[in-house]
Length: 185
Image: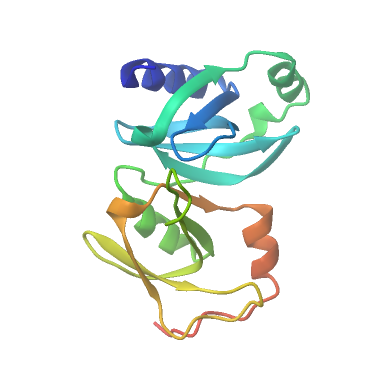
């Protein structure tokens, strides 16, 4: 698909609260989203799976290879159940990764930052709290599967980010059982 077609479909779905099936260049499985806002480079979605919304994600348009507006029974059920009319659009400035990080830092919550690759060999997954934000990168404190914080924050160049997720059940539930990051600002 042409990038212009992809962007028009995402825009149309955002205007109508439609679920979209999305294929990314780095994943063989499609994902279901409802787009909430977009610009020329990034788009914000609410993640949908089996009639449940599970957090928000921000993706790059350049990683999309195919999109389809579902406009099927799933869409009808979401609308009939009143789920799409009750979506809360978070106040996130998606004009660039720096502004995304600034918005999320103001929320003071844990997030997931990913770098996904086609071969999967150089994938990176960071879950934790934003410490510092710069023009071309940010530092994020990461915690591991045992809920232990790393000794120092991880430097994340914006150019390597494929997506950021926040407000998901995974992040929010895990966050209830760990202590605050080791920094004091």
